[in-house]
Length: 138
Ligand code: HEC
Image (cartoon, rainbow, N blue to C red):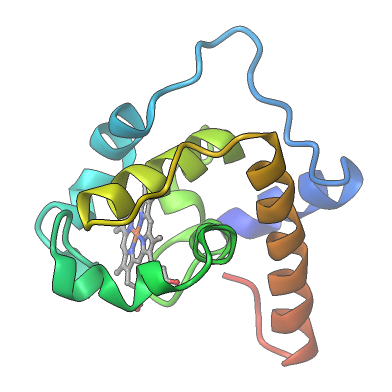
């Protein structure tokens, strides 16, 4: 089943209150990157923007942090939703994005509560956009 088909009911039902797994310590951005993103982003699998490649990331980090994070969470072409690791909380995923953005020169902090709220708003916007366009969610 596509990952988002699993995620979507959770997101919708809980008003995006993606409960972080209380029993598990949350990973840092670096840990998220190493466990869940490096498999593609270290070498550029399927043209994934490579870690630390400033030229590849320049356009991406011009986008607002909340927007780029939300688009990655939903999935973009060959980039699978949540980087393909459904066990990541939204906050962990967002830290992973911030960590990669910093490696490319952005000044993106790990998201605080206000940024997390903005990311959730962007996720809702993105899902609505995709649906309106009649496209399938990944
Ligand atoms: C299976 C390979 C794969 C994995 C694993 C993966 N990515 Fe990606 N990612 C991609 C590819 C391919 C793209 C380029 C998509 C495009 O623009 O066509 C991408 C693009 C992105 C982008 C830019 C999105 C945009 O709006 O253009 C972000 C942000 C991102 N990835 C974050 C992450 C994070 C964070 C993780 C780990 C939690 C992760 N990725 C794991 C393949 C992967």
